Length: 120
Image: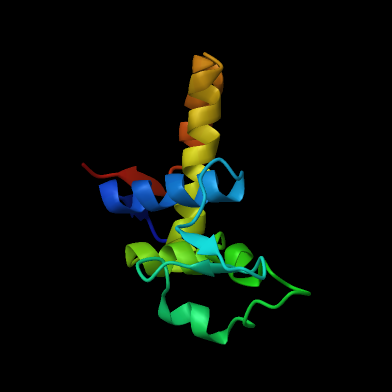
């Protein structure tokens, strides 16, 4: 049986950030140098960024793509990538149903995600 995932406010914020970056609604903190290469800011840079190729003129967005990944956002918020992905699936499914005003669909989703508990 699957272990129960408890979504606290930190994990919920991480999931929302991951989904926003994945959908390109939100962007990681950073900027471009004169050669057009994107580099993360000091706050955005994490240990996981060290194993990503250095941006070059041929691949200027290598670090930007990584900063949108579940691994990076999980490191940014101090959660595991597995917890983040599970929480993101839950947040995405429930928010879509609620935005569209589909209460029946929301209740079905709640039944499907019996392994998730939202902790305030």
